[in-house]
Image (cartoon, rainbow, N blue to C red; front, side, top):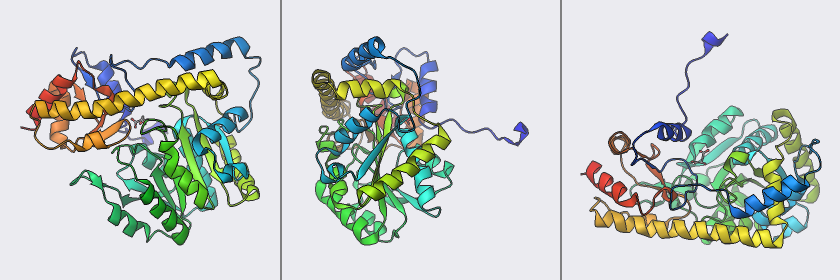
Length: 396
Ligand code: LMR
């Protein structure tokens, strides 16, 4: 049977992570995978997480099954974190299930959409996170890109985006990044979100939001502003959230899938479908990470400590954005990189070609994703000059 297989190329992001690990150059710089790094290049466990884990260890009473939706306390607290104070949540129109990470949530969303409409096309931003394609194709759904990022101006292709979305039929799904667009760092402003809401109402397509970086752009509530606008105005909405970045729980795989229906009954029916999708894929999510998040969000002091740590990460990234632009100027890197300082979250495109990206890796052990996406958090005081000099050299 195995002779039927052809080798699968390595993942464009996780493959680089492995290559970086194996690289013995002491000057190597990892700007690839979306993992927050501190000034020393480390990704330490957050202090609030450590405290919650201690509490968990001391208080866990059973390892019995949790149920398809996972930790229900976590689900409620996550719904509050994501949706805030909006009416549909109070009206019982939003139901949330714990999932294994953001990817697990998207996979559940894909199967859920497939059940609702086998012919649905998933419209994704051009470009988007590479794994979006694999996830929806794995569920047998077709994907199409709509214009989003303009490599000429390093800005938004807003008019083209609107023109394309005006052609999307009812029954299709349009996937937006709730904040901190991965890979471009370019987000919609609130007026542009309103245009999306109006388009969704007029066209009748369903919006799916990938919310993997809440808290990394401007703040926990600020980053959810577009999402909450849509949730307040639309009949239906799907949200896939991740706690990988904002709680630093990457390997513990903690996420959530929320369905919003036009009323509480339709949301409940939709939710039973999400739960039965979950049953068929992995039965139920692992307990640890969600318990930790619930302990943090459910405890005033721990929550405040977590928010302070998250604020610190965001401030560091935002500071780095200006720092990078200055360093590039100082080392005469050809081109204008001022746009990096304007963007949000962990990523920006450098907008450089494949040859330059390859040379950065081969000659300088600087790892960036093939699309020219950099993880801003991978830059620090020690490697910024090295990076800027190398970039100036490969772009000469
Ligand atoms: C990324 O985009 O680098 C992260 O979301 C990690 C991943 O799974 O690709």
